[in-house]
Structures are given as C-alpha cells and as structure tokens.
Length: 176
Image 1 (tube, rainbow, N blue to C red):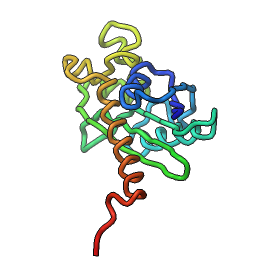
Image 2: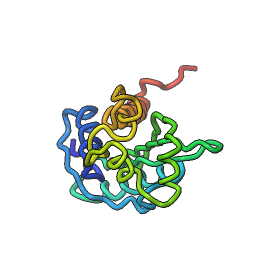
Image 3: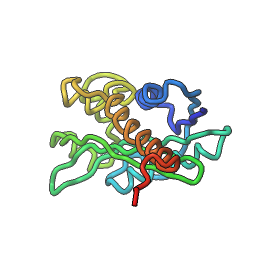
Image 4: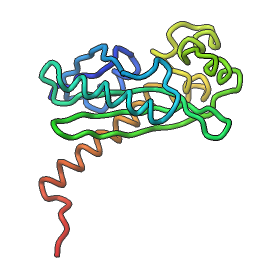
C-alpha cells in the first residue's frame, strides 16, 4: 500500500503514519486550491479534497490523503476546524474533527487577513507551532495536539474506507 500525503507538515504526516503503519508513505507539497487561511467548513473541506485528489494522480498512489486546517464562525465565535479527505480509485471519503473556540485576540488578527500559523508563532513566542502542537495544543494546554486531532480525522477516514471494503465483501449485506 502506497499513500501520498498532500502536505509536508510534520503533524499531518505523523497522524497518517500512526493510522496506516503498514503503508509506504510519500509526501508531496500539494496545492490546496483554497486561500492560505480557509475561513469556513466548506473551504477547509475543499482544500483537503483538492490535496487528496492531486495526490491520487501521482506516484502510483493507492490512496491520496489531504488534511486541511481552517477556521469557521458559529454566530460571532470563531472556531478551529479541520478536515481530511481520502481519495481511493473512484471513491472519496471526507471527515471532520474537533473544534475549539479561538480567543478574541486571535480572531481579530485572522479577520485582518493573517494566517493562524503566523499568529500562533507570535502568541506562543515559538517557531513553527503548526508543525508541532498547533493552536489546539496551545489552547488545550497540550491535552490535544494537532497530530492527535488529525489522527482522529484519519481514523474516521480509514474506518469509512474499511466499511466500504467490508460491505463490498458482503459483511454488511442485509438478509431478507
């Protein structure tokens, strides 16, 4: 099994490796086709889909994987959101994961057009937060990391793929 991941982000790559330990993993800097800071579930999901489909078409991949982080409003509150897509043959699976409200001072900077990764580096006084614990790690006192958040999404994606495979193998056909 060969999986091509449409990202060079360490947290995303590790999440995929943990869910598919038996696979050969290849990384590719795939274009998401959405804005640098996705601002809705729809845009974030589309970025994941675009990355997954792009990866499926390259390097003889069994799967193409796209993982995308973004933000989205519910009312006046801005939340982190994250989406994943698994492209396999003629199938496409998508899943979303945890959400957490962002502090007002972070929201203000994102509304002004800044990217969350850059804002978080300044806020945490560290470099490359997005490659490590992520905003979710900072705002949960590292109880949840960006890797574990994307691992959850990857478990959902693998589970959907396995269910479809099992269904085709008659495991879940209904009896009459």
